[in-house]
Image 1: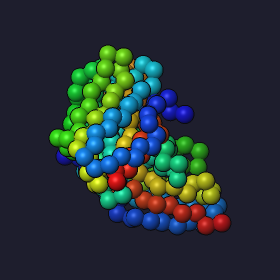
Image 2: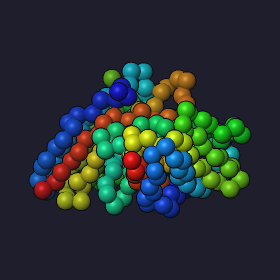
Image 3: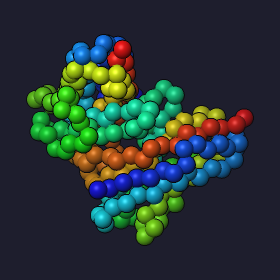
Length: 114
Length: 114
């Protein structure tokens, strides 16, 4: 069974600084998707970034980028120039493919200090 | 706005009662997923339907059942409710075509069992 591990329950970052959130996963599949979702206090689940396992290039979305290490089964999220609005819970998630369920990690609460 | 609609947004009921949560997926999405989010269990996958048929089952209790109707909306039925069933229940959908693996989440239904 696929598992997703986020070992850090909480992190804090100074506004305008950079922070990296860690995630590891376990799978026997060779092709899959990885995601980072953001859950702000409104509780809405918002997609931050996605990565397809067959792509070697790390995904980037504005201030958000990932470090995808397939051999190590590691998928970390880097947030640059942190903003107060980035404060939220962040979930790492794995999917075996299109129209497949997501398996989530336990999440990490990120706080941003002004 | 993800395009996924869940009702009701909030629900308060008593132990032993039965409730029904409703979800309308994004237009054109064939897959519907139900997740339960509680403080101690994180985001747990319950069940997935694809075009009216059950596709995958997760940690769904026997007291819970779901179905997807011909118009693709879905309902999650929770019966013989216990205090521990208090949680945020999310519905999500995924695209039938041009699928990127992403799930689109509704705003959730918060269930409180007293």
